Length: 117
Image 1 (tube, rainbow, N blue to C red):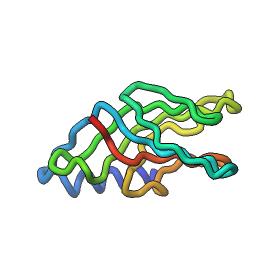
Image 2 (cartoon, rainbow, N blue to C red):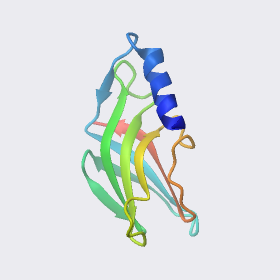
Image 3 (tube, rainbow, N blue to C red):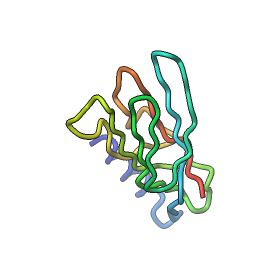
Image 4 (cartoon, one colour):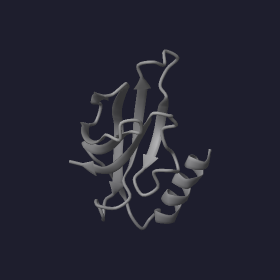
């Protein structure tokens, strides 16, 4: 609910001022909190890559058209191979506010860094 309010505030504040573009891909950072390993994972829209127990799918990546380097946000679906009840995360992540909507996992952190074309 908090994420939806933040997305609405961002879009309302920029309505008329800036348009949003969709990217063909994005860069996701993966962290294994146990081993300390990190990886930057390039993903194309619709592509799934596996790191550790997680399969990460980039569903969509959007950014302000006038400033592609700023505030990207992405819809990700993340599945843990140990969880059979469905995705452990499915929703929007905002690059400038990774804690606002993050993967809740005792082992892993995943967040969007930027959109790519």
